[in-house]
Image 1 (cartoon, helix red, strand yellow):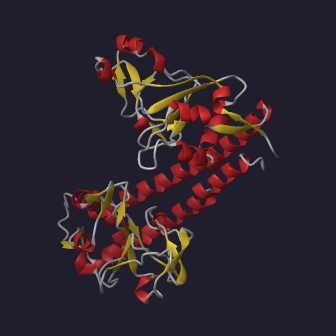
Image 2 (cartoon, rainbow, N blue to C red; image 1 turned 90 degrees about the vertical axis):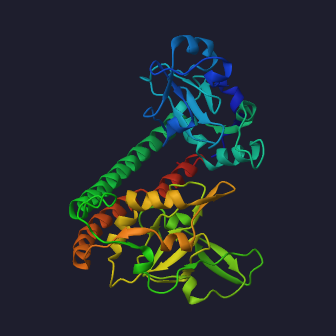
Image 3 (cartoon, rainbow, N blue to C red; image 1 turned 45 degrees about the horizontal axis):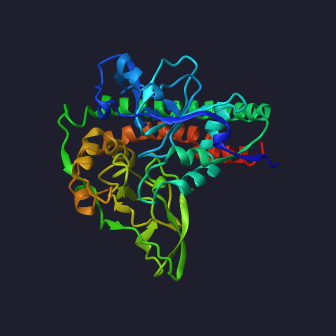
Length: 395
């Protein structure tokens, strides 16, 4: 179905952005009117958990960027493209220059428009209109130039309702996953105590003590390679469990040796990412994969499973004991946080008796299987597929 493609500027009453109060002689307050920044737009919603405040005088001086119910917000600096619709019951708010406010005419459904901002069509246009390829910045003029395929209002509402329903299901699954993860952490703490304070006095050892063989980086793809293969993306190992469908095809200069293939006993660790929270995230594959390689953004750690239970290692690796070490020791290069094999070898973990690890492992596997089922019921990929179909007129 073909819909008329129209510029965003024809649909809007207002497209504006805010200002940092201190840049025009005003100060933040300890309470008052919420003042939004990019980090207050999370998961397509407005998150006020760490919001700043301004008083009414400052808000009056910055009245151009007052935020009203049903406004669509989109981040235009730093992390581009985060968006949310302001709820009907939201308080009066304001924002800084990294957040754009889009106030639509009644002929456009705000939720349809916000979903469109997450579509591949909008993402491609936004990418093309960014100030430069290296500076993450989107101007108000660029927003106005975006073109949206716009069906009649009733069709917009119908599509938005379908996506709302799918989104509610997705969020319920996400909440179920969060609760299963909390249950796993609770059982871990009950059996082993807090790994940081180590109240039960378990032995702490470097990761190198439970490694069997050599750690190795994966294989680097080449645009002119002679060997074709499938290579894991980081999403395969940073989600808390192994996702075998997260790979892409690549070319390699040489036939990859066996130790570049995905093996069940390898703890696959993220070497580097622009997000510090993802660096060092890791998991075990669910089986051997002879037709899938791991890339040079991943470190393969061969684990001696006679010393440590896989599920126990996964749980202790996600603890604050390990995360704090990784975040303290990661180096940065051009905005990317990185760890290396030497850093990994020296990361300290708890090593309680193997029998106790195995007891925990049996429980953890049961919990993890529930989490995986919830994840597969409606994954981000499935929702994204539905979203793209919606804006191709296929719903």
